[in-house]
Image (cartoon, rainbow, N blue to C red; front, side):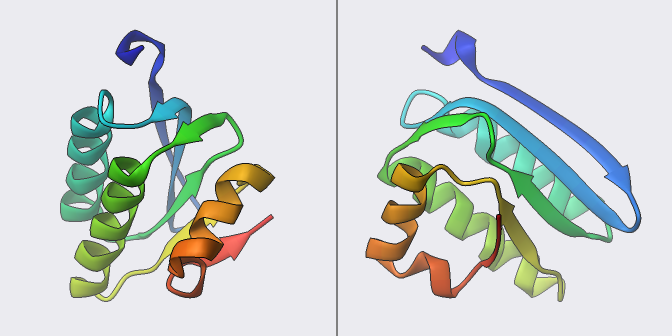
Length: 105
């Protein structure tokens, strides 16, 4: 459910860390996209997306993450993905997105 989505943001050591809790899917994608794109456009930092509490992602969510990376690269910034659960990491591997992002444990 969209009400289960929680997005938190914090800044430290030159990186904006975004914690996403819940599901990144067709129902929550507009909220996630708005938040991530606003961070990319307003902050002059790299972004680390903390996925420790991300329970599910579908193709819409993958597209939002890819769009965020593309937008960040236009500003010369990097996007890191951290804490991916094995089932979610597998989707990034299958789609080849794991080669585009900086992946952290």
